[in-house]
Image (cartoon, rainbow, N blue to C red; front, top):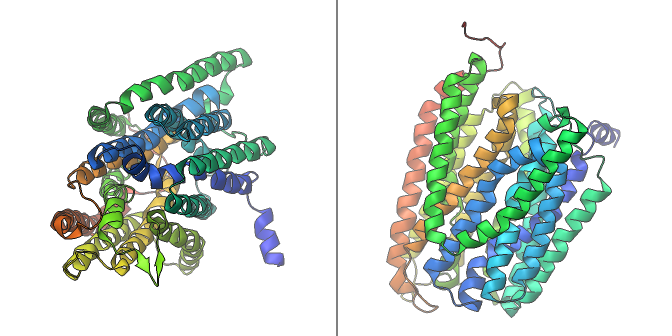
Length: 491
């Protein structure tokens, strides 16, 4: 007990508060993430293609705006202020969607996406600031924080499935509204504990701060109608997101080539290569609320021991693995490092790609073993989600912690946002693959199984191939990732 008390006393102030805030801040996103496609198709009459296109834009803006959120929070509003402002928009968004109309959906998504897109980076930046770059506790803190986020997912998915079986969508979105409101309450209660520690905004005068705050709030409000319009043109917006992602990647590459500090330059090169590898992982991962969910609804036998499994509950396989596995992995990694065993970032990324590839390759096996009805046994999608979830444990928390290790101080916010933008880009790519699925209804599994077989096989083998390539590159990546003294090029 004394050892536990000692560890708790050594946790940087605000870290524990951010863990609990993360739980409630995740509820609204969990509900929309797991239910948007089903709500759009079953309640509002969207086609699968249109629903997955909107879901792709949902993911793209939610993650893509993280790039801008890091900049806006660090230089204009403050991470703490932007987080609360974003949560207010999320509350209003969930309330609007609960009205049950097309107009409510579009305005609600515009409000919600502006809030969630900008404020998630703030949480990660508030946490990472509480650790020095060389502090080994950073990775454990992010693993714990990631477990907290997935506890929010677990609760959100559980509620979403229960409401889904009753088709009570209005009640579900009201539940999300209340959950997000509680995140605001917790943030206000811990206001001083979660203050920024080191950002460019802290160096300006009071008058400059007020001016920047006004600009930041104007941007926050002004983004809502912009996203509203873009949601009505989901396919065009998806293409635009891909173009922007490529441009930002080129800008980061240019900054890397021009960077004077050679050690930091090598770290930034490693970051770019690892981010490209992660794009493959996240493309497959973002299939969960789109193509995989449609597959689970129409092509999987969800009756287990006489009980119907709601589609959202399947995604809780992921949440449960992350909640339990996050702290366990943190303990295992710490133990291995204390024994002198190197657990490096490139190795973790490689393992993640191989696992998610395997997770997709078991689905075609289940399809081939399905009876004449075409309904795939539940065990196969369970195994798939289990493998994907373990893979996520290897890549996602260490990806956040990687920013503090590899990003120069002046690029930290932008590179954190770029890392999240990768997931947004993957969401658009996942929507393209999901859009290849033909329209089908329950009872027609045998007709659509060949398409699923083709899509899942190609995605799975593609991820395995990239994973093997990254294994080959491990020695090179390890040389790039250095913590030696800084050296600058001569002028």
